[in-house]
Length: 160
Image (cartoon, rainbow, N blue to C red; front, side, top):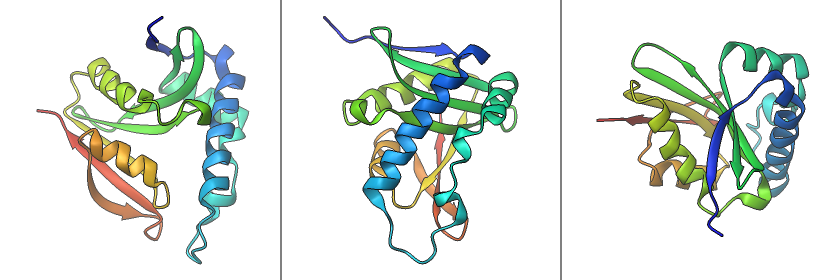
C-alpha cells in the first residue's frame, strides 16, 4: 500500500496530540545533539512547547496543522503571516520514528501549495540541527542570517 501523506488543520481537540509530538521531537533532538557549546541559550533547556494554554492560543490564532500518513499522526507545524507576501514556518516537528523517510521534504512542498499567494517563506532552526539544515537547503531555502547569539540559523525561500 502506498503511504499517503496528508495535512489537516488542527483544532483545540488536538492540543494534547500536538504537545506530545513536539515533546517527543524536541526531546529526541536535544538528546541526540547535546551541544557542548557555552553559548547554549536558555531556550535549549526550557520545555516551552509543553505549555497547554500557549498551544491552544496558537491553534486559535494561527494556522496549526497535523501531518498524517495513512491516518497515522506523524507530525505538526504552524505558520503565521508576516506580511501580504511572507509567511513564517514554526515548530515543524516530525516524530523521530518518521524522520529521514522523506516526509519533511514532501511536507514543505505541500505547505507551499497551500499558501500559493505567499512568495517568501522564512524560518529558524537551531545551529546544531544539521539534519534540518540539510532538509531546508534541499528544499530550496537559503541561509540568510542568525539570531539568539548565533544559536538559531535563519532561512528564507523565495517562490517565483
